View 1 (cartoon, rainbow, N blue to C red):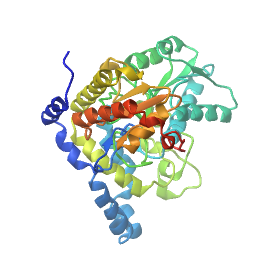
View 2 (cartoon, rainbow, N blue to C red):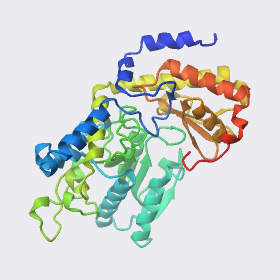
View 3 (cartoon, rainbow, N blue to C red):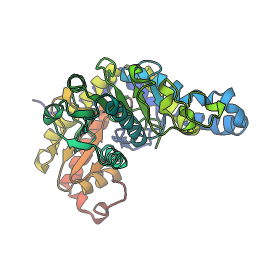
Length: 417
């Protein structure tokens, strides 16, 4: 097979139906940004939206903006905009709080439902290799419940085998944060419900990167973030999906006034809303929500099937170029080789992974590192080009060929990797 050239990649960019979206992002010069799987790039319109929200809405209209600019309904309004991206209906999603807090809410709600329906079920199936926040949140909830429940950690093919009639909830991440491996949402949800359990899906590495069909899979609950492929900004609010059949029945325990049936009645006692609003708690972060809306506007205009196809091709290109240009440097591809089983990232392992990634970042190729030895590169199809991937691998090759990673400054550990 003939080795690929940069000209080959440039031709792919010329034929890219998503190429125009790149112009909607404020990407720094001389930077190849391959970390949208951790923090999405800034949309150009975000700054104008920030000025509008802060200077005009807050600064001039002050508290009137809750009505004049409809601040109050932003969680539901943005949820309705996000819903089609994850296979949900209007009224099934709210944008609010963080992923960890939202997981606490839906896991609590699901366990409460199961406690009433089948009190002998005490098990929660999760992945031990999952992003730690999900596991930590579940562990904290169990302690709060008095350790009457237990977490069953399973991996890969063992997940399905771990789901039986002793399980209350199956709580899994659709796309693995480190390897990028995709779980079969439909098959696992079907098995979960056949056993009488409830399903919760974490979509942090799925939403905005690939088509997701929560209702098509009959999922019960889902959570996810907006600051990765949805480009909502650092720490932008997360989201909650609750299937309509559970609304008004599966109640979350952080019963703040925004989840009340009539918030401005200011009643002494809590009466839950009977719709998705019950998943809200306290007053919402309006400035962050406004930034999130800009990213959602872009994603809503993109064809998710084309986004998925391009990200698969970008990942395949990276793996091929890595094999062609860096074969002698002992990188090991951790992600699935089959792009149908891989999300919008490729993870590669190397014993000097931290220093190598730091050297890449210094050269303007930004990915990230996950302990103990994994380098992650993400392919946000709306702004990453095929030529970017070629140049990134060439930079990696030069770093390895000339042992640049051995320089002391690249071996000093930073707080964030």
